[in-house]
Length: 586
Image (cartoon, rainbow, N blue to C red; front, side):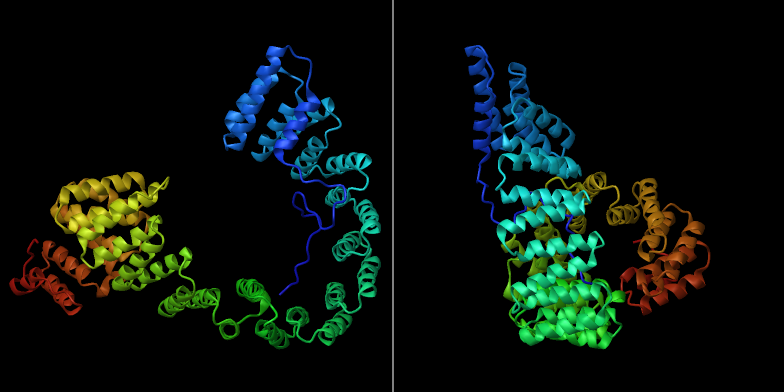
């Protein structure tokens, strides 16, 4: 449970932790209007009117989410007035939004050379430099902005960020110190200065920054935590424990300190004590559930580092259930735990409890439906998918899964209707559309609508050539009626090339070869099917008997037909084969 310390050099645009005395809330439209006013060149009246119209139209296209149209129109503006800094700014902002920082920076540099007083041009250019990791250049722009607006605290703070990102730690610290004189003692500024001192190898000064916060407010327990963390990170476990204990003295109800102590004990290889502190943190009602969940996920995903055993993980889940019994998120965590331990039925029960508390979370429903499918609980899948469709009528996967249940429950007409409805919601997903067409083909095949079914299988495979279930089933159905056997062999061969140890797929390939009269090769692949799990499958055993019969081994064939019967084979044809001791084609 390593402590994660914020990296000062990783920042986002427009970060502000202090008041910006010189800042203003400015809209994009205001920027554009001001830019036009400040960049007008002498143009003939007709050209000026044409420019103003096109510029206004470009802004409109940009606002309506049509950036390519805006780019085209703005390019036209620059043909009319090559020195329009406003058009350059608007073009630059579009390029920046498309992550084309090179084009954006060139445009803005030109715009600033024409209109050097426009602060918005400079701010956008600074942000682009930041995104391009040109931190020195960005810092220089904020220097220029501060020359014109020295009391703007946001500019000062962002300049410090740029200097820190450029690894100019001394200058960044100096800048933050100037900001601190204006704001007074500020926790976040002090913490950032402390981190910069650490990055600069000035450990003693880092300690001084945190102690300054403690002197400023000695009753604030968080500051002792910062000091304890700093000692711990410097390998001084004695002082670290001293200040963690100070937090409990000041704030006995603090839940977070238990996580810090857990981290402390873990780093000192005191695993059991670490876990006891973790449990206390999980039991605390003063720690938000989201924080506990994040820590749980971190522990569970780094088990070697966190020393979390299966038993301990279950204990943490149970604590969450006891302290947050009305939070659906806890039951999803319990479900995850069950799934990792292959307890599908238990995971499903946990998800059903989660849905009782929060029925509008689609991802929970989808997970539930997939578990129903894995459990082959077709009735459950049918009922749950019907409920999900009512709540999420535009989610195609729900229709897909309901159609699976319909086919398994022999509701073929309903399966076709469900798929046709679900296809309306499939957008730019040929693989999913292919799966749905395959299932529709399955339903039609079961209704003996062979030609329609095979047409859908062809469409399905064309949409998704890697749909191995469709390839296998289509090949098998072709073999059963003896149609297009070369095509069936190609499809089935592709499947076993990808899954050489799947007994079902091997059985299909062997049966296609059988239908083509290649009994010796069929025997080889059927033996592989039996070897890889087919020894208890009555269909595979019956097929092997058929192959042996065709190879003039009637006694062995009869043995395998009888084995097929013992393993649950009940077809009339199988019983007739045993009785007449010969192969009978279905």
